[in-house]
Amino acid sequence: MSSPETWFEDNRRNWDDRAALHEAAGYGIEELIADPDRISPELAQDLDLIGDLTGADVVHLQCHLGTDTVSLSRLGPRRTVGVDLSPGSLRRARSIAARAGADIEFVEANVYDARAALTGDFDLVYTSIGVLCWLPDVTAWARVIASLLRPGGRFLLRDDHPMSMTIGEDVSAGLRIEQPYFQRAEPMTWDEAGSYVESPEGFPQLAHGVSHQWNHSIGEILTALLGAGLVLDSFAETPYSAWAPWPELMVREGDRFRLREDPDRVPLQFVLTAHRPG
Ligand SMILES: C[S@@+](CC[C@H](N)C(=O)[O-])C[C@H]1O[C@@H](n2cnc3c(N)ncnc32)[C@H](O)[C@@H]1O
Image 1 (cartoon, rainbow, N blue to C red):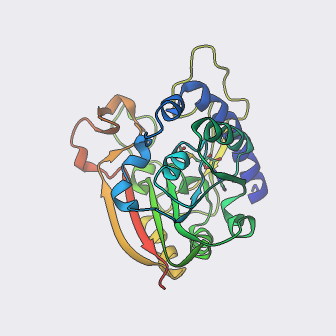
Image 2 (cartoon, rainbow, N blue to C red):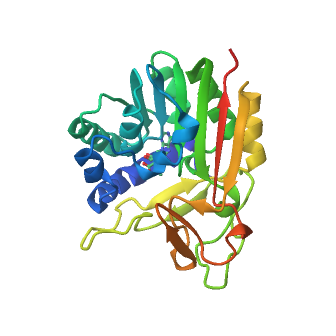
Image 3 (cartoon, helix red, strand yellow):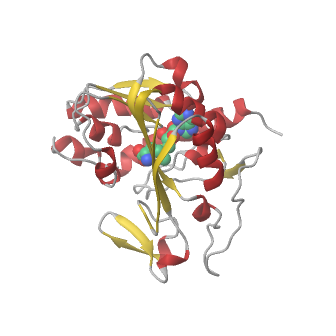
């Protein structure tokens, strides 16, 4: 049995390697720098839910290269903070933000340590797409979210749907449930040479391919947030995703992907908003 220290250390190394690959693959970075009004397509999905950020204090958890963080900073907040476990991601995020002229504090921290690592409270905690799968326990995570919000502060989570996370990678025989739906103490451990973006020609395989992931049911996520004292404001499940988990079965529609056949079979993402009561 491995330990949380090993899980986080393996994931940090894996994300440092992925950061280099994602930067080399493009990741929408140059488009964001070239156009000061551009909002990343991932964040653009949430503009209606985010609303007006004028004068707000905003923290983006698991910010990776900061492309969504730069986009958030363009919505008028007073303070924008990005938090991530991976120094390789944050080094690039700082450089991207500087080139984009965005004033952002990037803080290296495990999400579970975010309250201790950050000063002040926030009006918005934002985290999205590929975040909960890296966290072993949603109950402790939800407490951190609540602790970062000032009374009246809002939380927005968009992520891959845990039902879609149960489906195995090999879909040659159709969609098959192969991974747990409910949170388990032990992680699912993978060893993969690449990431979810196409590697540019000649780009080396990831030196640290081992990563550890967990699934969390919708019930576990909602129970954790309510148990931390947050009030749920909205919850939606979507038959589309910001990326294509099974490219051979999916079609692109603008900036998002859905199953080519019978897309209403399985939810691919969910998005929720909540707030800390005043
Ligand atoms: C798929 S990215 C999500 C960000 C965003 N959707 C994007 O693509 O830019 C996942 C990020 O979570 C970070 N991460 C993983 N485990 C973490 C942890 N325990 N604490 C903080 N960040 C973590 C990784 O370093 C990575 O940058």
